[in-house]
Amino acid sequence: KENTNYHFTLEVPFGNELAIDQSMAHDGCCLTVVRVDKDKKQYVVTAMDETMIKTNLGSWKIGTEVNVERSMRMDGRLDGHIVQGHVDQTARCVRVVDENGSWRFFFEYAYDPEKKNITVPKGSISINGVSLTVVDSEPGMFSVAIIPYTYQVTNFHNFKEGTVVNIEFDVIGKYVQRLLDQYMPS
Image 1 (cartoon, one colour):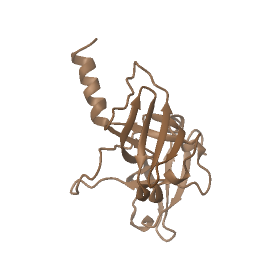
Image 2 (cartoon, rainbow, N blue to C red; image 1 turned 180 degrees about the horizontal axis):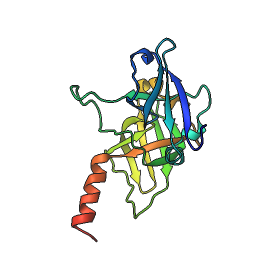
Image 3 (cartoon, helix red, strand yellow; image 1 turned 120 degrees about the vertical axis):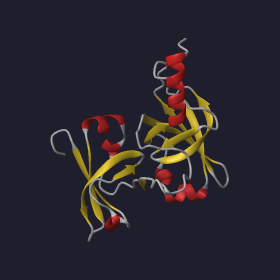
Image 4 (cartoon, rainbow, N blue to C red; image 1 turned 180 degrees about the vertical axis):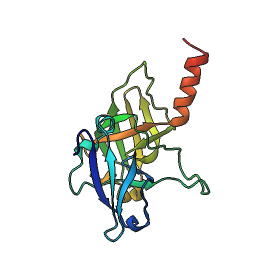
């Protein structure tokens, strides 16, 4: 901790490929690389107070497993949903159901009708940076289905009732909603 900022040191297999000033998503939260130790494959990112308030980064401890994703290269294929790394808020896991080969995770979040922070069935949601399709959707609640591969290679295998996660609502939905509000007020 330095004043109101927090510096996190992470180690990843591709740490020797990183450079200062790159953006990387950490549990879905976009942070800038500020220092790199290529020999140790470690790097440092800084989170300001605003980030700490809106995300689950404050719960990280030494050894916390974090989903990490590098920024998309513009010359690459868009594989999945559009995720910006701009966390909208947190949600809490309220139930995990074993579906005999896959899992259904249910989450609750603070719904605000003014912000229109909603999910849409078969729409996109990002949970700790993992781009997923919404299964069940109600204001303040949604579920996603997780296949074994995703369960194993992300930190979903650590989720249980009470786990707080970062969520980013569907960016296209947010823009559509903003346009509707602007040009078709209720």
